[in-house]
Length: 442
Image 1 (cartoon, one colour):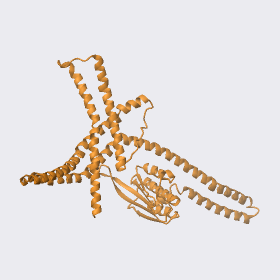
Image 2 (image 1 turned 30 degrees about the vertical axis):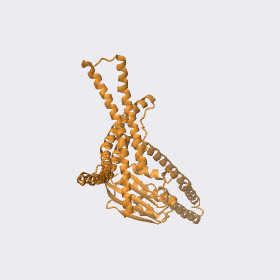
Image 3 (image 1 turned 90 degrees about the vertical axis):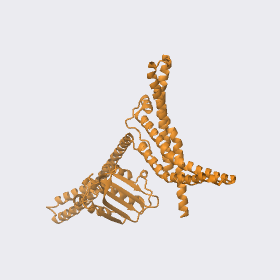
Image 4 (image 1 turned 60 degrees about the horizontal axis):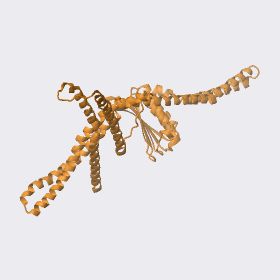
């Protein structure tokens, strides 16, 4: 209990130190706005100077130099400082909270270096950075400043009051103890309030920075465009690979058996008149080969869209897919009704691919596949429609890595194509939990 209590207060002190850093950085974050204010002040004075009789007239050359400085130099400096503020805050979110998001490239970027430079200095992203740095600076100055003042000033006041009490007692004037005693009580109370407010202020600051830095509309659009480009290329590659697999399976299996079947029927036809018994045996052999060809064709088409899924839904198709796995699979399906055919197809594909990946890479001894209908809550707090949630859990080696060829990119692309989400929790040595949330009416 004492260790937990001490750990909590250590966390509080770290949060206060973080807010002290935020307070110091807030002054830097406000520099771009101050620079623009100076530029606007010069513009105002330049426009009003001709109508003020006491203001001396400037020479045109000096006026042009000032115009370049205040109309171009100061705004460019403000946007550069704002971009630096964004970089500093991204590094803080990375090193302190582990919040990392790569800066998405602009798919529509121009190759002209002059246009790129002008857009970098005075484009929409540059002014968005100025707005961000200003908002972040005001928040740090007010919110973080309030906590720092409460904690630091409260603690300093209590220490100073204790020294004052000692001084009063040495001087032998007990009547002067009222003020220091009040400060001894009020100082720690203020510090305690500041420590209690620290987690809330840190949380609001992180939320603000994430919204402004990572969730800006233009950032989301660019990220979406880049993601669509990448996923489109991966899906084209996956479709080409699947086409080659089907072509190879048909060529090596069904096509050869169909050729053998045709030759057997030709032999039977040539012996119908001369040797009916042998012809009957050949026809029987042809029937057996035709059944084998049908089985092979079913194997080829099994990964495309099984008939049991179309006729009876996901609840009947998942046990069939589980029965083909080399590892024992438990299937839990709780679906009061069938989702859309597209949602069922995506869920079935994810389940089959996940079972294949587990059999190849995980070394698991037990797998659980669960499907259920869950409500979806939108980002704005309202209902966003229901989801078909498919969860595949195994007790294997864990450590699933998309870069190691485990097929996760293909699953992500398939789920994302219907605006679903795929999450993978795979700590090394602790198994893997794959969760696909697919819109019910995809």
